[in-house]
Image 1 (cartoon, rainbow, N blue to C red):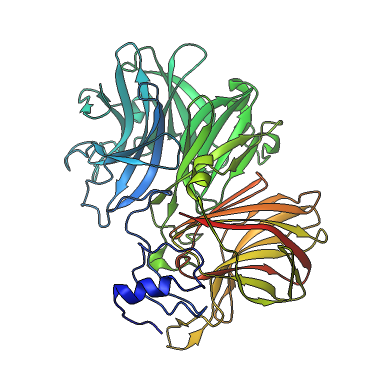
Image 2: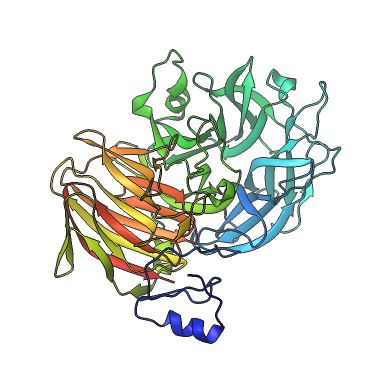
Length: 540
């Protein structure tokens, strides 16, 4: 039962033993903390670890390592809800030294007026020109209601001497149809300096109806020449937000596949830049398996990278969900809500050139308030000296309530190659969630590590419990190789409704789950036998 109580009673409740470690400042709704029933919680307005401004949301990050300031600048498209008609998504930015703590820089580049080419702004990229001591930000200009003779999209740029005051170059508009490319799809410019000493600008576009990444070159960032096709897009797909970089001995193209059946961040790799470009040369239905990979899940989009010379991080956005419904995953045929929270991961390069995503060290360090591990309820569990064994059908261990910012780390060891386990959030013993007809039922949300076959695992997202729908139609999973020793080292970070799970430096699974804060969570076994060890809970 929800009650309205004053701050003195609230403080008393928060001190009860059930709440071993709690974020008191963010509590908006109050609750009888002596129960493990479901609590309808609300996200904080502004969020710091997985950044969200106090007003609006983060769309399409454009990270850039600033060699002058010695930090990362993450430009992004500011999404207001609602946005003004025709003029929307100005470029805002944050700065960070560690991909964990952010300082807002506010609005950098404003939208043009409703009659200008950049009435609405789209994704771009920033580069620093040492010779002129200027920052250049190239971006997409989106025309409002373009006529048949006008360009729906074109590339434009602005400059700044100090990363504070920006001036648009009104005389520069790069139009795709001037070079045989589309006038409607010509966007997401990305810049890098090639081994040839020239600046390269990659643009996602189409040519003769075929998806293409065009390559333009320049000596001075002002005058650009068409350098032909950098890479064709396979089949009928479209590679948004391209990002090219060299890491170790490998070249990479990271991109976001906008097709509704995919909606993921992916990459191609090659030992040389020419090998990278050739990854999609065969368009006959043969996928270049040795040269491609996937990064994260459907809960992470528009990922682009930046490096300080030591670490390379990738930033993307985790979408909000329609009606704050955890089952509205944005999968085909429904499109996800555009924009959300800024999420960062660290790139891990393996010996064979493959990439995976891992936790950011500075994020881990933020969660420095260790909490008591307390099992509130269980089924099929035995415990001995900090090790927990879960056996049989529907075995679980239900842990005490979480705060707004949680780090959960533990090791799961399965008894064989077929054991199935999962982690559930927003869980209670008799959750008081109301169905549309007013009936009370229990439902909670689980990330389940499911054996696809003896050697392959797949992370699934499911709604469990008496009122749950089970497997969510259209949700993506994340496939990975079963560890040979059946040991899964798992770390989960939550910041309000953002939830990021890492497994063995092999899996990164970003998700949004409303209601995590102030509710219990569990580790589950589904018919097999698993042991849970090294369980730690920390917050900030």
